[in-house]
Image (cartoon, rainbow, N blue to C red; front, side, top):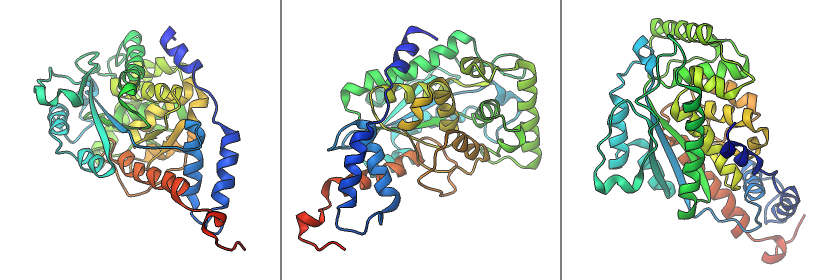
Length: 355
């Protein structure tokens, strides 16, 4: 690992358990039966323990939508052509995508990042404030013919995620959401998940953008071929990333590490974010406590990733869009949990009799 990676990982501390005990006492004394707000109470305590403050504010919400293309799409693993990736990036920047709608509702700022889109983007001046150019290459290589990227580029992708946090943190960052865009990216995500969980490829590979039965069988065969050719080492996360990964997936892993190092809660989205989180927790197991799982994706591999990390999602809405949409929805619950903690009266404050 590089100096930046090592420095970031070493900066990740444990949750503030003493503070969490104090928060629990306040939650137990609010004007309600103890535990009656269920996971909202757990969430409030968790967020306070991550940030390390008794009075928490989630004023500054940021959702990073990382985009990248994948050479393996040449094998027909997606129902959509790779040209959709840059087209959707432009849609994000115009504010017309699902993530834009849901982020506006929750009051989050969307930052769109080119990690490896397979074309040179032309971004208008008026859109630059929401766009970040961290392009490593024009898409990954086809991992059925060799590694998806070089080891150096795999490290760089993770470092770019860390640098994104460093660059955006001074602008305000109380909570972070992860999102993705990349035609074909459920294929490398399934490959990563299979390697890092030890699960059979068939049990972690889904239909992505809507493959039929024939397409799904081909996708599974392509992943098997890629793993057989490249033989990624499950004990070496960077090796897994460079052999069968994606630039945006490595970037998400870096985002999670960077945010945890600054004690910022990370709300991960669906399957692609789950693959990035698997890599982050493999590099730094303590980072798991800084992650909030927003939802359970329809993609079957996501369940395996969440189970491996011991994370229970907040929502199950049959989502499979990506972009950070699940993270945006879950941020509303995070805000609700903190408002309960900050604004609800105790029995003593309200003059209400306890049981």
